[in-house]
Image 1 (cartoon, one colour):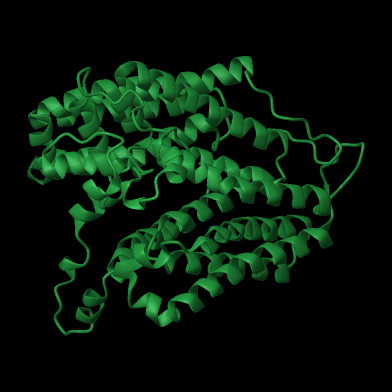
Image 2: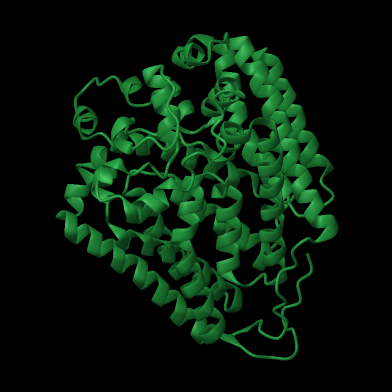
Length: 450
């Protein structure tokens, strides 16, 4: 059954990618096909060859065999992906929501653009410097990455690191307007600084999002890319570097392992664990759990979904407030082999989370109808974000929003809360960009031909 699951989804993702009517390599349909293939297929193939490494505790919690678990997952995930695709197609056909026209505001001042890029980079670097000062220096951070979650707790200044994305994209726009050697150097330096800052927290996600933003910005604003025009040796080198980066960052999180690296004849297999890598880069096992655990008798039906927001103001004892991240319920159910459901307070749950994402949220609350509705809505959001970007291709804030939507947006409580936190930053950056960087003109100088 596991092999069938792999073959089925390989064919499904490839079919959607190839039959997409949009020739744009980075359109939502093509991006989500690649995204799902990269996140799901390696995990499924790994379990096929090593079924003993699938978490047996999940099977016990759901009272199913491995083949039964993958069969149910295949059914629900197929419905979810098809619903997502239909949502994208529906928007492209009927334009349910039309982005606001920006004709007459697309001439960009180079000097203002460069000042804005420096301003946004300065905010991001300044926020990072404040954080480093508060915790006692960079060396302290580097040697305590195993406690990175605790170090970042209540450090609200770190929200300002999102300005680094915008700063890098603005420097890329400077290269587009004036393709000088100095501008290229400044862009690459800003990119390296941002990647270093994001990576210094022991995470990889923000760095990958930034790289994806740079690739998409290059594609839309400088030169369109396609499989035939891609520099194959350069692509291979980048893939090798990224694979090395993916494997190296988790090692840096554990200071006791860093010391071992200096010991002669160290067993490097301890540091680069294939199983841990597969589980850390895929949510597939969480989706398998959700698809097999929930049914009509134990579905949540949005119980406790809004409780964290209301309890925050009404509950004096913070330990009694339910978790915003409902993934802690998933983890608690599996690890304690007992049913947990919202709005149980955080003190009764695990501290570790298995993020529910759109799949887990939709199925845990409304089963198949929820999967159909919320994935269809997610498809509409993806297509709307892409349409907004195409409508104003030189606005880096819309490009930032497009990437965040495609790779991080869903209707789970955790992701909704994250987007609410990002909203003021995106709004401020967009206002600043349109008011001080753009110059008004009746003529639309940068006609979009996509």
